[in-house]
Image 1 (cartoon, each protein chain N blue to C red):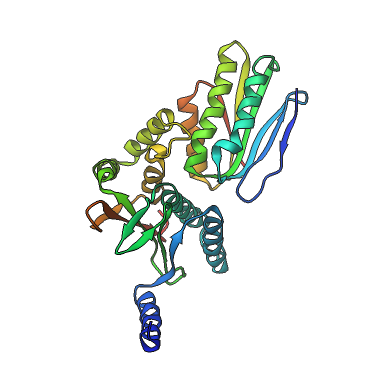
Image 2: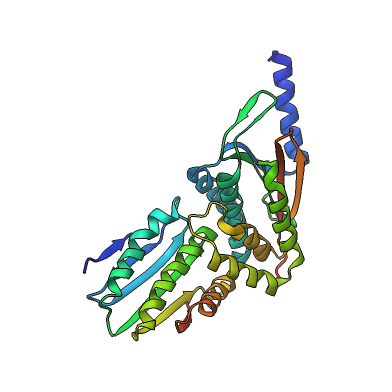
Length: 193
Length: 124
């Protein structure tokens, strides 16, 4: 890459992150170590301004489940000549600070296009359920799913909806003929109910 | 019977499985890298314990946090104790939750709805 392009890229990445209020953007393999590092980073930051315990727990919970989804479900793919690895994805944490109204966690990963209808059906089902319905679905999936089941029976997604009390915001972007890019945005409100 | 004592870390719980002293306890945080590998020895121990259980078994859970991958393993553990109960033995789950942790209380209540073991809830 030419030197000036390189500098421009760094500056624009920095500007974009500031403008979008992203504290952390990570694109790559999601390992257990990465999960631990990112969650403790967020915890330390929240501790620095004595965030409410219940909100801290929610943020921690959502981060863990989002990262777990990436590490378990992101598929191998080839895109524009670059090979994406299994378990790779993009993980974004919005600005963490006492002046913000909410926290946000965004994930993006490649999924086989054939898996999209099933995933979409689950997401829509979750979004239609109320608190009690989500609880029943969680119990049902926990009873029926096997612990080694890669799908995890969608427990992570149900749990995210339950813990945040918000609808799951998702999008499937076109990548190529075989893959779609699954983007999931989760918000955790800082107001205490 | 062998005693299992696993010291907790920031991502795995403290586990004590001691038939002789009648202590069965899971405490701390549970988000192990590999849930199956972590919990299999405990589940095998409970199966073995079920062959000759104490007259009364208290199963203590004092967890601060567990992820959804662990929640299924915890259910498997509870189902093993349900088997022991169903064979005519006395089993009670002692479920501890931090006073302000409603989610942990609710998790305990949900498990008590799924399995037929009596639960006693304790805040700390």
